[in-house]
Image (cartoon, rainbow, N blue to C red):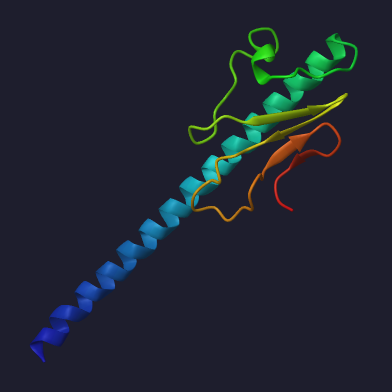
Amino acid sequence: MKRVWLILPLALLLGVAGQRIYHARKAAAAARIRQCNLNLRLLGTAMKWYAIDNDGFPPATLKQLVPIYTKNVPDCDCQTYQCEVVAKSYTLTCQSGHGDYPLPPHYPYASSVRGLVVQP
């Protein structure tokens, strides 16, 4: 009977600690998604300004935006953003997957037609 009273508080402490770790990981994943959304907005704005200065044509690569339209091309979870240009439209996609955050592949993305799309 004494062992039950000893094990019960330990199990309760482990449960509380596990719950806090779970919520901390979820908050960190949400922060990474927010940063990715901000990066995509920044790149989308830089692409629009580049297109305005170049007769409506966006750049073929993101490196053409540096240093005039943005200081650098940001990375998301140590991976770069993919840029697909067709005529006068573009699509920027995030390839990282974002680990614990439940997003389908290639989300979030930004395009000249739809703007920033976070989820399907």
